[in-house]
Length: 350
Image (tube, rainbow, N blue to C red; front, side, top):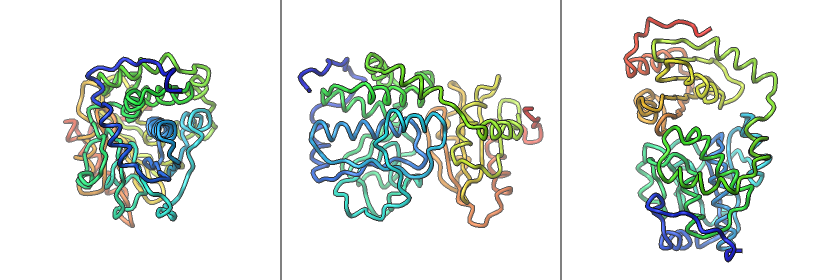
């Protein structure tokens, strides 16, 4: 199989070499291997984890288990699980953690607060592209954490390139879609490595499946939630804030933020909604505006956790009996101060 592998374009945008691959193999010396992603995984996380599983299984014959936590509720993500990455299984907790001899975190980090790996258990490898880089990460044997890269799928694609593996069309489509969604078609936060990986994968993409993933059918509840979300949006000059109250889906704040940042004149968007006792936050910025990852950290500060990169970021605050309206007011005030907009000037979007 490897003898028929295509010769990829590899330049300085891919800093990996055979020594890196050998280090990874040495670290993952025991099986089975558990691959974990963050709660409510997006296409980039699903694709990157699937790519790692393919690398470990095809290159070294390792037994791999792909697990995610939380919800996959966005229509495109459901379609991706069905058509491109069906090997993922949902779990609520790691009750059988001792059954795994090696653990990989993908698109997340230890201490980030958005994955189910217990804090007292360190992963063997981490593949991530988010800020901030958490302090527990220094103890991880194999690290590929590059915040300058736009997608975790790019990091994994580069490993596959160095391994000289022929990437099957379904996996190539997943990796391509992961890069496309996290960089909005290379228009936000994309580095040279993202662009090269995107182009290299393009020739192997199954466009029929990609069409089904990018344009899935949506339930009536989506349009009702969308109408309510747009009704909640307030515009403060170049900033948009949408306080959504209770959400049926934990990822709806992110989906709405992706839409609101397209509003003419918008330089920053903050969406917040409650789900299962947690206030879910999503921040989006324009491509030439403030860094969303830094913004979310300043907004959340002492209240919870947040992280991201470039023009997209997310955070969580555990309410635990706290008055959510008070917290939302604090978050809104911090966000508007950072974007230098007047808190009293808000007008309804619709």
